[in-house]
Length: 556
Ligand SMILES: *[C@@H]1O[C@H](CO)[C@@H](O)[C@H](O)[C@H]1NC(C)=O
Ligand SMILES: *[C@@H]1O[C@H](CO)[C@@H](O)[C@H](O)[C@H]1NC(C)=O
Ligand SMILES: *[C@@H]1O[C@H](CO)[C@@H](O)[C@H](O)[C@H]1NC(C)=O
Ligand SMILES: *[C@@H]1O[C@H](CO)[C@@H](O)[C@H](O)[C@H]1NC(C)=O
Ligand SMILES: *[C@@H]1O[C@H](CO)[C@@H](O)[C@H](O)[C@H]1NC(C)=O
Ligand SMILES: *[C@@H]1O[C@H](CO)[C@@H](O)[C@H](O)[C@H]1NC(C)=O
Ligand SMILES: *[C@@H]1O[C@H](CO)[C@@H](O)[C@H](O)[C@H]1NC(C)=O
Ligand SMILES: *[C@@H]1O[C@H](CO)[C@@H](O)[C@H](O)[C@H]1NC(C)=O
Ligand SMILES: *[C@@H]1O[C@H](CO)[C@@H](O)[C@H](O)[C@H]1NC(C)=O
Ligand SMILES: *[C@@H]1O[C@H](CO)[C@@H](O)[C@H](O)[C@H]1NC(C)=O
Ligand SMILES: *[C@@H]1O[C@H](CO)[C@@H](O)[C@H](O)[C@H]1NC(C)=O
Image 1 (cartoon, helix red, strand yellow):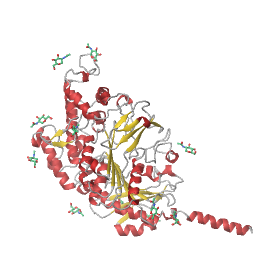
Image 2 (cartoon, protein in one colour):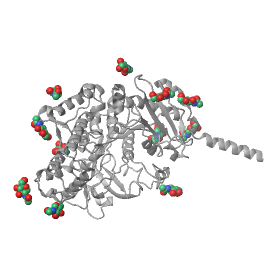
Image 3 (cartoon, helix red, strand yellow):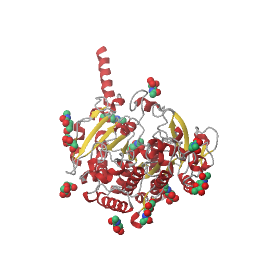
Image 4 (cartoon, helix red, strand yellow):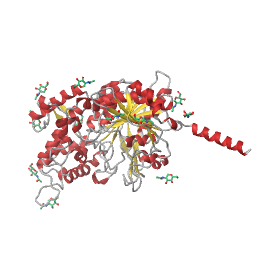
């Protein structure tokens, strides 16, 4: 009797153990797919239980399987990708590719982690190199091409088959999320293979690399020449912009400049020497907050559209940063020494004959623009947003209006080229006051306007610790996981409602998404304020009352 019960217990325990696929997280599961795609496991698969990676250690108990693959199709450079996969019992049957940052290499384990704990199988490439900075690109064409599109092109179909090997079935649907370079890479991949994704969440895409890099070079030079990039000076200018323009949309109580364009006009129309927009910044011999007339002029140059000296300043050369972006510009400019991100592109990506060009005059600006165009014709990094017009998938596009790394106007251009509000498969949200991809905490006056909508780049930190706690995510103390507050969830909802709809019908996408900010970000994640963002061309409007409550916001 007792023996019989033990046997039953043993049998049921084995059944419980056999109910998930964790035991398949071993080399042999992936042999066939490695052969098929000419790749190699870079190491034996590891898991959140074996705790070999600094990120997955927070997911103990969730039994996540991690695989790193070397793609060996091109002998001139090795691309690698990594994938985190949840148990088949918690898998949401979806595949997600996350895009990368700037010119950096390496997989984005933090972004992968933030999604795998919500049931996604998530992939990230290393873009064809490891490490940060731009020096890896010097004399390395294949690495540049892999960063431009090659790594993504070879990894997406491969990783989908890795997923199928682990679960015994392909994912039902495939998504993409990326901001900045990651946004560019997503659009670029749909040009390589329109079937890669069913939906994309694209933040502030750095799609126009070839134009942006010369513009940034010129900003670096202006910064140096006019000593404009002392951190304190930039913060003073940002606060001045905020104080002068917050009321232009009819109220200061919304704590936001809704639109930069009338703000710029206000500054341009004022007397540069002593107009009232400069009040408090006078250089009168005793004012520690002094901003000189030359500095004011340089500032106003930076926040206007850049013109091409090749055509004697009559055509667009690259998007200007909106006037609200000034506080964010220090991110990539080292204090005026022409030695940072602003000049590294010409230093490391351009061929020997144009290496190190700086836009410090019309003549050199013209040369830099041409060299950059020639570079792109070879490496094919620029993404073409017009390809999104007529593309089969759905796109949610967003940007901050205070972005100092990828101009807000550049993202508006993406929206327009992709068909604008006439494209029923595209929704575009502007996040008033947000800097590049996340709020970096440099908000003028310390006002953290709501910015978080589930895009990449948010890493939850446990109190007193680093990175995330899976508990935070599981408990959802944080407004994640609803289609109201998370654009990726809204995208999934949209795509999957479309799939379920009768053919020939077009399902409408989200028209409102609530953005959140956090009290004491980044040390805690309790929600501070929320407000509705509105799919362009609608605009958000504060109705009055408690500014922190999204119920007091509407789309008009
Ligand atoms: C998970 O995988 C295991 C092992 O392959 C299988 O027995 C089980 O039915 C699967 N469960 C689900 C929910 O797919
Ligand atoms: C994977 O690629 C890296 C970088 O090229 C290389 O160092 C490593 O030896 C490769 N691993 C395998 C198993 O091929
Ligand atoms: C699994 O593959 C990796 C990478 O090729 C190799 O280093 C490791 O020895 C293999 N492990 C087993 C158990 O075969
Ligand atoms: C590898 O580089 C060599 C030398 O630059 C080039 O001739 C060759 O075409 C490249 N191979 C591939 C597959 O790109
Ligand atoms: C995925 O597809 C399977 C079979 O086609 C279906 O049963 C399942 O509900 C789908 N899952 C999701 C999350 O859509
Ligand atoms: C402002 O500057 C203009 C010249 O640019 C001058 O004519 C005017 O008097 C100045 N106003 C004040 C109040 O200083
Ligand atoms: C100089 O400008 C500052 C800031 O506007 C002002 O507070 C101060 O009184 C001015 N000093 C003189 C001597 O005008
Ligand atoms: C942004 O584009 C609009 C419309 O083309 C233009 O009026 C505005 O000056 C541009 N702003 C910047 C900073 O380039
Ligand atoms: C182009 O504009 C810049 C100011 O932005 C000016 O310095 C330059 O002289 C102009 N060049 C031509 C050819 O008009
Ligand atoms: C840049 O290219 C344009 C168009 O091809 C050409 O007209 C112009 O002369 C070139 N400028 C320089 C400085 O080479
Ligand atoms: C999450 O919930 C667990 C169980 O209720 C609790 O112990 C833990 O403190 C919670 N974590 C957070 C960050 O609230």
